[in-house]
Length: 197
Image 1 (cartoon, rainbow, N blue to C red):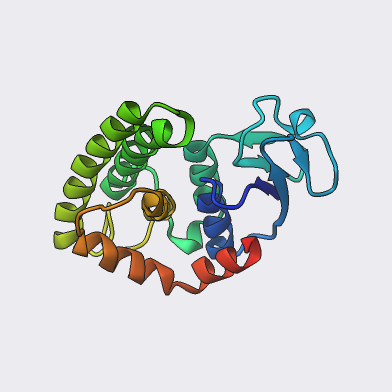
Image 2 (cartoon, one colour):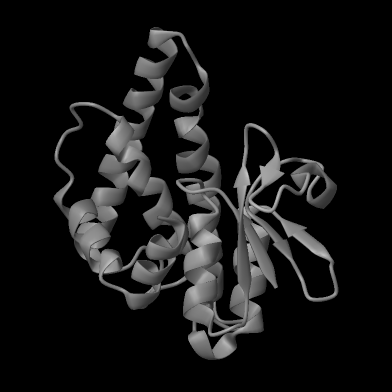
């Protein structure tokens, strides 16, 4: 398998999960502005959407989108226990949180990355602060976001919460900070971050 990624992007989620999975994989960096890979390949030939993460399977099939790739990795490496088996409530709790991170949290950052209008950015920050408060309350009661162990939802949440550094003057979220510190110490997380540095 090959993961196409861009440093700082949400593709770090899949990079972490691949490092945790024990599956064999390689990585290829993508410049999202030029749509060229580090080997000067036209990325649009790989993924016409031009976005990361993109996972190229050994049979050259292409998977895109965070939620789909995260589940694929977890299901290909059941011994890593990144997602509970089909039928177990923990699986659906994890998928619920994974969806929340994608649709409510990740999406809310959009104006901060794209808009040049300060009022739009200010509104996005207010929305994010409300979501951070909600997550902080949840993490005050739970070591991980969805279940009692690290899951694909934690990997995605960790990556999206790393983007908080672009927001000035955020209130304190001590439970989020503790969560981030716990995830920072996971060897697979350290490995993925080092490979993307």
